Image (tube, rainbow, N blue to C red; front, top):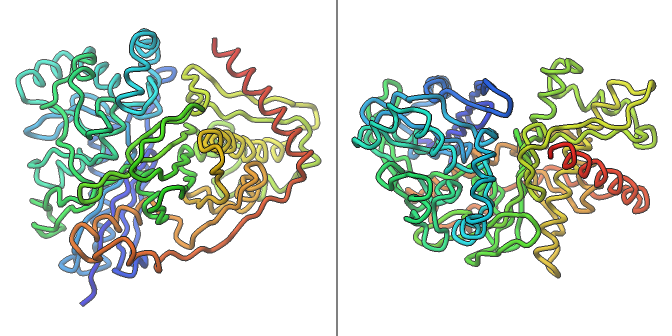
Length: 497
């Protein structure tokens, strides 16, 4: 009898359901697009009910390809800081959830910065930025009187996306999350993996409104009341998407790192059981907690990566579909690019700059600039942002430099982008055969949670590297490009103030 694991990957722009076998082969996959809305300048929202409906749809479709009685476990991975408030009884949201990219609490973060930034960083490992969940929950409470009233009466609760899906999959019985997602709320002391009372009070949030924090390989709940899945399937692994990708890339040991090319780009390095504090603009976070033992990580986040390709597709109309960008960008070589640069800070600058008010710019335009120049500048802008993250991480690591990075995510299929990334980062890039490593990590954690595998070491033989990209760009040319990029970043910062 075949045994399967169902992985649910609920991302910013799509929900994907994948069935893996016990050798981590993809048996079946279904995905549906989810488009956030932008009701005001800098605002990004998503409908929790749409997320639930489309998650159900993808699960139902993918499960038609197997015997669902053979599903041994379910793993969940998700966009992390996105948060919403909903009825404890019905699961119906009071308003649209606020997406991690949303900048609406920028001014509130500025108000808090002088007195609270150091306290928050010491306790949570995070910088005081609209990116994280705490100010989003505070905003929802202040702007939805019925939500505040019902929360105070014990009738409303708050969840990141993982715990919302868990709540719904468990027949609205279980309100819980794992340590990796909890660490992104800006409400949790990462030394103890518990909610911090001082921070809860600061943002006017009660602990009972928040999901219970559990180990990442816990059996969180069992399925209940779903028409297309049997009751009783254990939901036995939950990880935030970037931590799931780190786990899926089998970066189990301190010093191993991965770079995900999704809506944004996320560089994460496992620091073992030690919390490494960054002096270079990165954040310290929980990687996962496995059977009571917490692994930590250093992380750098760029808010727009694959979303930059979507921008030139949907907003500028330069390409019809995302894969077209590679062929278009190959229409100009490095020598022909001139001074054309695209800083894709379309939802602010993330690490290591942390400029939430930043907007994007394209520089170096001439009468000779073509669509191909803009396409290549988009790929280079993505790679430059990531190179800044790698440089910051190397600064924090001092003598222990990053010498290779494993990549994943949709845009990592772009060979030109991967070569540019290797060139700009001066680092070997390894791309595995399976690019869905976020879902893979959730499946691995879920399987470990129900003892399909007895240890992480059993999984190491199952990872296969597909392609390596080595740096080729001459040092002098690279330094010239980096100099121009740094000037462009300074222009962005000047324009944002």
